[in-house]
Image (cartoon, rainbow, N blue to C red; front, side):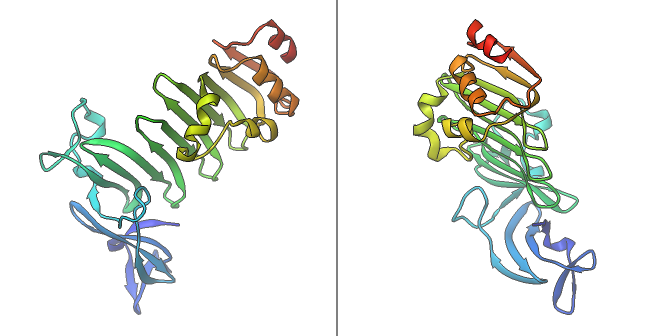
Length: 250
């Protein structure tokens, strides 16, 4: 669903149009430096005000990301500010009038972020907090591109995919499986639980595996479910795989 500034739309006969076509999508009311609201548009008609994607229950309202200082390209570690004060609230980035991201700031630090392709499809989703950091991205075709979860002094889990949905790398360190149950409700996607390994995981012809969480038992599970059936080359780096695991792969 396309997300665009309302002032980029034209009106004709009481209907809102985009490039001459009746518009259905999401329109943002912008008055620099502020984003005032967002509305649902159906068949050229404006309807309900919309909630923030990142903060359910809170209506879209914030500032244009270009007015947050310092900008990302010259960030020096100082809290991001707006009008001289550490910024708390939502910030929206626009490109050619299309809204391409929403970020939630708390005391000058980004805590959540979502970005969209120009089509309006989700491109990436990120959460930063003390419990677990999440970084997820999608290809333009909607297929997952990567999923990364990390907990300081706890674990790191990362999966990378190709556009056909096959895994090209697995990064697994620390006690991820031991902590997964307690964190599962907080995770945007619950990838690489034991059910996923047993029934869904499937790797590409070449796959990279990294981290001390890659061990013989894990490889046996993936091998036993047929998840390695396409693999022609498997690259291991700093894993806990023993000679027995190497023999299984060969």
